Image 1 (cartoon, rainbow over the protein chains, first blue to last red):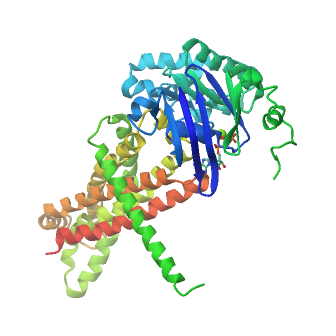
Image 2: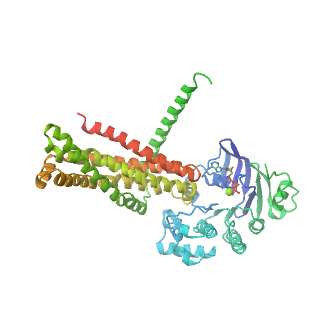
Image 3: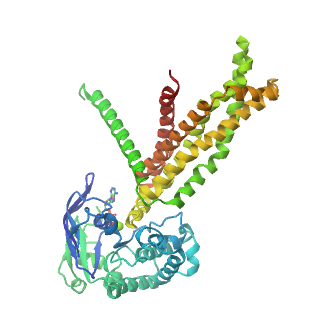
Amino acid sequence: MIELHNVHKAFGSNKVLRGVTLSIPRGSSLVIIGGSGTGKSVALKCILGLIEPDSGTITVDGKDVHQGDRDEFLARFGMLFQGGALFDSLPVWQNVAFRLLRGSLKRPKAQAREIAIEKLRRVGLKPETADLFPAELSGGMQKRVGLARAIAADPEIIFFDEPTTGLDPIMAGVINDLIREIVTEMGATAMTITHDMSSVRAIADNVAMLHDGVIKWTGPVAGMDNSGDPYLDQFIHGRATGPIEAVR
Amino acid sequence: MSLTAPLAALGRTVLSALALIGRVALYALATVSHLFRPPFYGREFLHALVQIGWLSLPVVGLTALFTGGALALQIYAGGSRFNAESVVPSIVAIGMARELGPVLGGLMVAARVASSIAAEIGTMKVTEQIDALVTLSTHPMKYLTLPRVLAATLAVPVLVAVGDSIGIMGGYLVGITRLEFNAAAYLKNTADFLELWDVVSGLIKGAVFGFIVATMGCFYGMQSGRGAQGVGRATKSAVVAASVLILAANYILTELFFSA
Ligand SMILES: Nc1ncnc2c1ncn2[C@@H]1O[C@H](COP(=O)(O)OP(=O)(O)OP(=O)(O)O)[C@@H](O)[C@H]1O
Ligand SMILES: [Mg+2]
């Protein structure tokens, strides 16, 4: 169970989060939607402790994320960064197996490589990619390597920051299925940011919409179409006019 | 604008400079403290050793060679004014070992290594690779900073030792080809007057300079602002700070080692 309560975060005069309150039950899949630059990525980074909020509390299973043993805490997480964030000094398989090659989850190299290749297969990448360097991959391939790295150590809680942007529709479908599978079969808790409405419907149990620094609407994915919320309606139908000003 | 505005501006600059010094000092202390807490990333350390030590050899060697040669010419010209040409071998050796070997070697390493460390870590920072490291339960200071700082601290003295030898050889070559010194006498003169402490003090300086170079590279890389511009600024700051600190540290160490 992840809970955010009244979380605020500003960068200088740019007030990004202005009181975000949200809870994600264990084993469920939440999708966060919202305009570009509204602070979705910042919210995920706050939960991971990469960014310290100015005020408010964030707890995972009742424990404050900014206190206690950070290593133990982070060992439960996997994160796909929006830009991939692959280590460009390491070949693909060592990126994927990064966690399995050092620290508490360390295992023999051959075994780590095997797991890496299996995870690469699950995101639709051939074993040959394992020995390439990230710079030798296309944007969409890098994204998928990032995804494979996020799930490599079978974490309990996984964050996906725009997992399907830059992918072709078929590959996007594969990734949506994979995320769904990880939640239903492995019982993981997932938080996904996406701009792709078909992904939202494929992945989400619940949906939350971030706008103007607060959660404007949240509810089960089935309630999204007749929410009666003008902001959500405009967003999911992609209308240029409505309560959300697109051009300022 | 009030009369106190220039004073306020001056105060702000001084305060921010002091704050920066404080942050750098804390960063250096934190780096050292990680030396005593596992895990230690041996592979990263070896990689840094090759990058910083081995690959700096050509530039440090060439710098020393030309400096030693020029030094011999200058000392000969200066010495001839009071019939003291015979001091060339010993002064070249002492000058290289005590001052020029470590300082020029340190500055060349600052140009080569502080910049590349700052650019590499700065790029990792702006592409979220540092954040990714953290989420993969790996401490950036242990994984990135400590191996580089340790490698530089150990490698630069070795570079200095090599530079000293090459510099003395440069002086020797100029001495016997251009200045009519006898080869055997030149070497004997060098060996007779050079003391162990001349060399050791230079090596200690080298270790300090190596520490400064890698620490500045890592510090400014980690501080890097967003985007390519941020990385560029971080690289420039790292080289400038490392060079100035090397010269300042050199003065302080020379005072400590050699003033009565
Ligand atoms: N490290 C940072 N320093 C300063 N400002 C930041 C930082 N990170 C994010 N911001 C600002 O916070 C705001 C929200 O950024 P964020 O990356 O969370 O947007 P987002 O909702 O993920 O957008 P997108 O859908 O385009 O990815 C932006 O205005 C951005 O400029
Ligand atoms: Mg984002």
